[in-house]
Length: 191
Image (cartoon, rainbow, N blue to C red; front, top):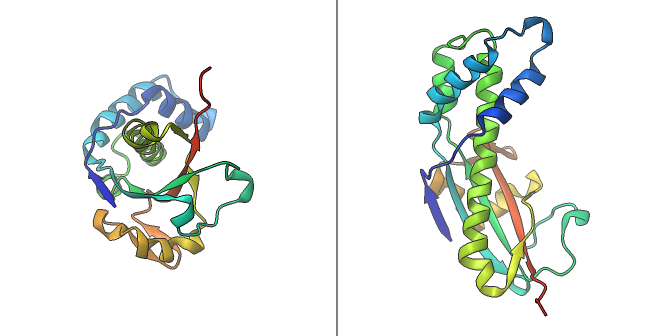
């Protein structure tokens, strides 16, 4: 089991602006929405505390994780199972002033949190690929979310509480958390 806490991630501000623009109906948009999102990103970045706990299991020794069979690669050799979160500080800060950056602050913060969680997964993907999978001549699949009915069982194998994630009624808390798996797939040899 490995744990990484409070690592740096870089938000994709343009992507967040694009998402917020789609969420907000055009009648409420102003020319200042881009500036508001940029200011919101700058402010809320300091409340994002990404953390991950993960472990890798060989195919022969792995716990059975139920994901959609169509998502599981046919020729995988191992899997990395992980819990990841950005904490709940961002939501606590939002609750202090839900209109700090205008009427769409909640949309902005939710978009920031989703992007931060995605960037955290990308960080873990790079770590697993560079430091572990490449040594075994493997690449990794995209992350595949684990069925929520498996959270309690996986929580006994991978201690989610080490990074502040609790499992209650098949839900992860804090809300911006997830449990997923990367499958290790052998790389094709260059001839």
